Length: 198
Image (cartoon, rainbow, N blue to C red; front, side):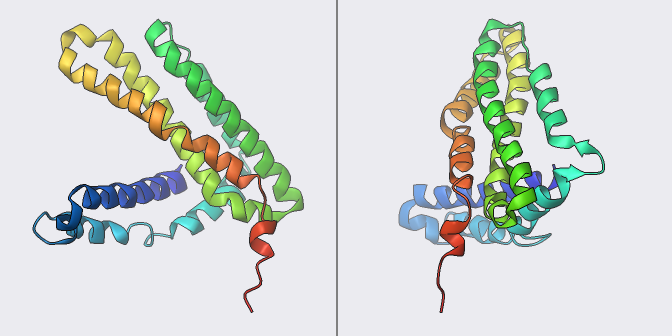
């Protein structure tokens, strides 16, 4: 998960600070609000410690198939088993997560198949795969948080209401990106490799 944690969160940091700058309008670009400093500080994070594209290549070419066997399917099976909730309110989220787990499983199979016959396709899909894996992994963490939030809701309603609402936002607005990245990736590499740059 090292490439995923490093890359996904640094890309999201750039997206979030860019949004924060725009929320402030023109003032976001000035030093008054401090947002431009956060943006400049975050800009380096996708680059150092191995650029995010290098991390993505490491994930698909070295981490997915190694001497430990099929690591990703073991990980996905673990998520599926740990997200089988008895709480009806959590089951709604778990059902949605299962949909994306199936997509990620198909994506992993596609990567493994293409790795044997067309490495350019795998290279072109590496960033998309890393992001899909990251979004699904975060959804898994949200299932764990929701389990606690619904079970302990009466102990701190305001706090857990915020957690539940944030999880709903994530599942509705962010997690669907995992499917987009899958669809983008399986278009292959010919659309990139056929460009003429001379």
